[in-house]
Length: 309
Image (cartoon, rainbow, N blue to C red; front, side):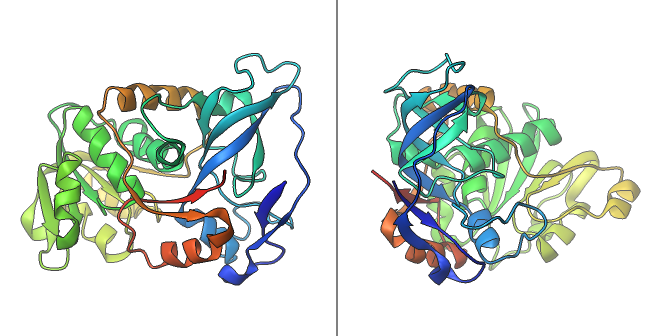
């Protein structure tokens, strides 16, 4: 098969489009012919060597952990899916990823692709969508009627966070740049703060939940806008436990794990048109270097997708 592999850490130039062995599924595994793969910041952070020690770094390595495609072959004990089924997944990040024509995935990491999505749209959902769900509901226990601030609403996690929070009956506030105001409002944001011209910490207070995707000073200024007993969750840095304790807050941080059952729940929301994928750009698999460079600018409004087949 054709795949994009890295043989060393470095810049986008280490991404090599080349021949690679076709993977064979084990007894409880499924081989998927990939049609589209999403790009996430974790991809280029691993490529650049920023995540050494956190993830395996055996070379050659195939990146990419957001995939959509069709079942090609199944193991002897994998009975849930059959060849031809349209599926999507956030595969195990410790195993070879989806910058390839084929991938082998454990059966319980898969779900049927939402019927109203293209493969490119479906490939944008798993990692960012599952992350937003985990942060809002598993970590923060967001409830109907509560007020939530989602930092970085135009990014992948922010996009899904806005929609999931709105579907749950929350009042949704988000920060973004002025050029993305219409986008985040179309996703369900009730209040939009232009982070370039407004200080969110002077605009909102007594919130129930903050979902931070920015870190740094943004995270630092977020503690004080939560009510006592509120929750602050973040995708980029561990919260300050001293401040959390002093302010009586709850907190959440961590990397989302594969979860086929949760993707089935996501598919129901998608098919009810409560959640959709915003795609910024689609690149052919061969142009993965350009796609990584674009992702690293941090200016994508929505998902960046690789079209595989």
